[in-house]
Image (tube, rainbow, N blue to C red; front, side, top):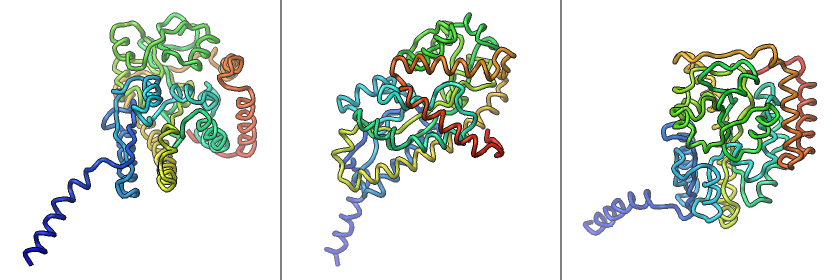
Amino acid sequence: MLRRSLYLLSLLLLLPAAAGAAPEYLIKFATLAPAGSTWMNLLQDWDRELRHKSDGRLGFKFYHGGVQGDEPEVLKKMRFNQLQGGAFTGYGIGRMYSPARVMELPFLFHNTDEIDYVRAQLDADLRAGFVANGYRLLGWMEVGFVHMFSKQPLHNIEEMKSRRVWLWQGDPLGQAFFDVSGISPVPLSIIDVYTSLSTGLIDTVYAPPLGAIALQWFTRTPYVSSVPLTNGMGALIVSDRFYSRLPAALQKLLLETGRGTGAKLIAATREDNEKSLQTLKEYGLTFVDPDASMNETALRGLRDRAAAQLIDSDYIPGSVFDKVRQLLRQYRAAHANAPASP
């Protein structure tokens, strides 16, 4: 009896150590998302799901809040296997597989239903593009509809030309939009934006409402454009080197849970961005409507000129842009009488 009791006691003593043991396959994963944010909470849920379903063999170690650096630095660390993955915005995605950023062209989509349809139609081709460049797309995510935040009200492009507008340093898509608009931006790492708003180096930035609150940019920018520029995309990525050394069962599990987590992130981000718009109003930020010069024809012209510049540089192939426009024509024709989603 005593021997049996000692045996059971030894098992109980071992359980905490086993539960807290590092998984056999550990994904060191970086994100700009701050601790406590919706994004970070859902990523931690993903980790718990992976560890449970893999019997503790597969899991994450998260580096949140940009502690591993801006997205180019995270990609560099992935190449040296110091990190195995990350949650990326379109900026980082463009450095892995730039054609995917067709989804971020300004003034392209009317609503989220169109975004969901086009992304689903392009999904297989885009996943193959990531693999060809050494990455695995586990799930899509979004940062949401991107607005201009500024220290002075902005009603048109002409007013933006006299402002100190931030550009995410090294972003070809943002540069193309500012080029065709005649705006000379101030290139900076995203990590330097808050400080630069405080010092006056910049006075205008672009972000989704949720991002502007999470990064505290809204505390320095009392004005918000009512019309969004684009819908900011995102993706959950691991290096193909890491993915390829996983057993087949864990590869399947990582892909399945990644898709599911991505879907949850998209739904939660859209809901939180809607709430964030209300929060910005409660904090007293003023939403500024564009004037007559910013009509749909003018905005479409900006989009097409920016797209032409990106096509000329082969950042986004013309065939990909044409396919998206064809898909949008098909979708809009089939849903001409359907109510638009926000």
